[in-house]
Amino acid sequence: MQKHSEGKTTLKSLNSGGEGRPTMESDPNEAVFGDLVEAARCMIVILRRDCTIAYFNAFAEELTGYTREEVWGKDYLELFVPRTVREEVEEYFRPVLSGTSSGEMEHPLLAKGAASIRWVVCSLRTFGDYQGQPAILLTAQDITVHKHTEDTLQQRTHDLGERIKELNCLFGLSKLVEELVIDLDGIFQGLVDILPPGWQYPEVTCGRVVFENREFTTYNFKETEWRQAAPITVYGNHAGVIEVYYLEEKPPSYEGPFLVEERRLLDSLARQLGRIAERIKAEKELRRERDFAESLIETAPAIVLVLDAKGRIVRINPYMEEISGYQLDDVKGKDWFSTFIPKRNRDRMRRLFMATVCKAQRRGDADPIILKDGREREIEWYDKRLEDAAGNLIGLLAIGQDITERRKLEKEISEISNREQQRIGQELHDGLGQELTGLGYLAETLYCDLQLRGVAEAAMANNLAGGIEHALAQVRTIAKGLVPVEIAAAGLISALEQLADDTEQRCGIICRLHCDEPAPVGDTATATQLFRIVQEAVNNAAKHALAKTITIELKTDDSQITFEVRDDGVGIPHDLSQTAGMGLRIMHHRAGVIGATFNVESADGGGTIVTCSLPRSDQP
Image (tube, rainbow, N blue to C red; front, side, top):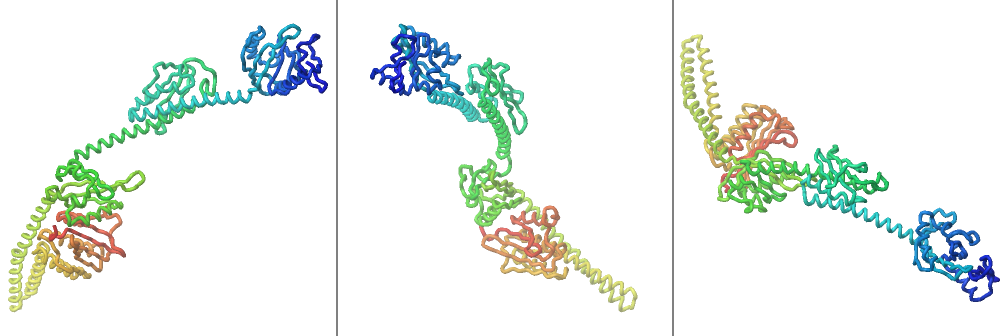
């Protein structure tokens, strides 16, 4: 090597004699060439045939951290090439030393005192001779940043590939669930089959799922020492395990030969299987319950009706189809009230529907429905509000029992009972009453006769006459109670007026009847039942509620008549169902016999209100 007077190093020494040390030359061309070599942003090294360093440019000093004096005459391979790749690099050098080209090669470069290795891509070619031997020109570009970027990209590409495999595994499980729905065994077997491709070494991977004493394995399953497993939990209890095995030893990683991502994937699959098992078990149970409910709905001898929140028909069961004459397709989506409820009852039934959907449950009320052929049937309803999981109203479920024949029988029994009561009352009045009247006259005559004679027994005869008169009054009262109503409309109002007067006289309280117009009641049987209901309500108020004032009121509108008995007594218990006596049950039964609704409630400010409503007999 030579240096200009300005201190620059030249390349003339390669062709000089002597000991191979550089000499100084003044050739301007060589000075320019030397300047270019020194200024080059690549590593330029000239090696002797034995790979010792003869020239080392400025960038090589910057890249390696060595000065040219430190590297002069030293073996390039031993100084800069790591032992792990030195043999490979020597193979690359060998053809060049023989005079042929070897192309380019990437290799790590050991820098002076560096914590990390640099990477270069170098090329070799023969260059002149040195002491009669060919020299080697080595040029190298620093590709450390590129190499690190490339390594990072490769790692990320590898990681992405692993994530894709994991996603494929999870997607495969999702697809299995979608296709097999509730076939839990099929899902487990399908998952086992797609496990190996999700692991780093799929060609030597096998798997197994053990669930509730059932086992599902890959075709090549074999237990080995290289195992990864995760428990399957169902409803908080251990139900099984999912396992992955390697069939041969692989390099160690996070968990034996398994990656941390594979641990996460296996745990995720185990959790998914637990949730899937819970869902499938719940769905199977729901299906069993639904099938059982469906069988009840389809076979039950009762009406099952489902309405939406607006009162439109969603479903009717076969029994309703049979008695109504309609098929579900004929009425689905239609308004229930316009289709099945008599015009006289529609407004009231709509009000009851709105009360029910507003959480006022209705039980045991009887109302008529219109059949396809125009006939009416009496139905006893039990309603329930339908809600979604959030508690929002979605409709109404109504269970109905056809009580038409029962109502007819009850009415016949009631009429028979009324006729028998009337017969007994008439016999009491015409038979026993007349006998007591005759005995009264005889006792009065005996008293007068004995008194004229001045006999002491005259007083006894007078007492006898008074007792007979009292007994006759009781017989007449009983007879009047057994035959309270003689004609449908006028007889009912008259009987209620008499009831009010008798109550005032007997109990010493105020009892008033308010009636603006005659009650449009169709027959004596209905009038009699209404009287009995009002009579029982008045008696309860007087005897049990300790009322001081009782009001009987008749109200009418275009569709119905309502009898209301209101008192200012102690009121009713909060839970009436726990304390209701025979009287209330009989009143409710009497109302049902005539197709009326019956209600008992506390009045604002105290007291009790008993209400009985039924359709007007003069309305269709």
